[in-house]
Length: 569
Image (cartoon, rainbow, N blue to C red; front, side, top):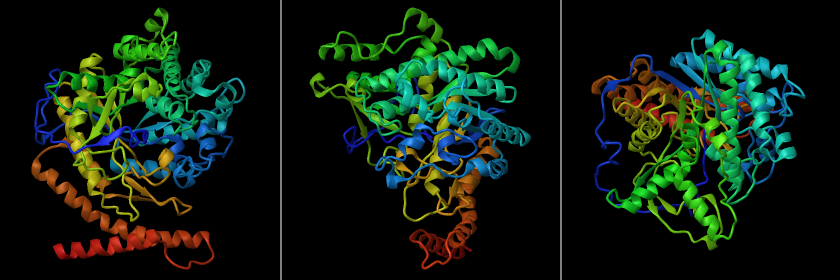
């Protein structure tokens, strides 16, 4: 998942905006329209997602090497409540149970990542291949296929082997390109006869900016103004090399595809009639999505990035731009290295220009010369950065269609979190989010955008990076206080299941009944969850003195919900 908290207070200004209904950008020809009742094309693929570090646990089991996140979470104060992903959801031991949940939901695909240090503990193929790690992913892939669930595999979801960080500086060093290619080639060799959908990186924006610019994520480096650009440069080269490796060595035998998963918010001009606002919004998207997509589809960085970073570098007295340069050979090598585009999207910002003088210091954020604004009326049930703005999704998808030649798109991450003391399995805000965002995607398909599949983020509550376990994106609630890590369905499971079975939104009457039926089913789950923490705690300690605050909250929620349901009958 994509958990991005880089947008702190000084980046995001919450303004009360008097936003009137208005037309979209000329090139999208979209409008903020009413709900659209229809279905997706036959064969549209529905799924859910996870990542290795966030769900597997088993951080030092069966020969796995240490990752940069294993090291980062051991530094006090880096993660909320100093949580770690050491055990997380224990997906390493519970994947069979999780596939049963997927089968019950009738998922068509499961998007997950392979842990580089689990199969290459030192990061280097030449040193040691961990066969136990290989077997884990073989078993996972085989069971998915046995249950008619297509594996969609991401090769890198942020968990670089720690030894490569210590020895080479991680993605600051161009040697990662070859080491990553060796890892990817091993995955193609061992799993490619069964896996047909590969993605090289998940959300490289976060890897570069939060890992090497702000230091909020592993490896925690704060190389402002240079670190993110250098890391991204090497990531783009690594992606291209892996694509070519597959194309030359494996494609004809395995008949698969290789893409990349890019995550981006939509940027909407504060004033659609103001040219400077329009340019700032486009600049926001180019510095976000275009940073990676434009080289991969067109061969080089967006011109606006080259112009702005180059000018600011000159103002700072530097002899060259802080944005690295691709050689002519590299441009042709990188261009076109995408069989399909994975797109992660969660939220939207209003954008307006803001000048940052070069004397303030160089950084990715000041290079853009813009301010991000949010409307406080937008719902924000969980993460501080995640507001529900469904109409931005349709705009983003149309932008991809227009800018990059309407590539095949799989939505690889979309969902919403909750952040609350009391657990409530009746997650009406998540059902509303899915309903609204998936409907905007349906409108985009009607617009002619080539969307082939959708992945809800996430299957399970999991480790949310620097927020630890304080934010929950899952369709299934995980009780992390219980050593068995039991899963409980939230109401959104039933709601999403009905969208899948109907392949969209067939008619108003049926759709309106889905949410009501889903809420009714979550009462029994709340009762189970209310009782289970007591059982789990009794297993772990010899005596129990008093139920936890969370347990009491759940009990009260269950009792209150039963009262409401009785009142309806």
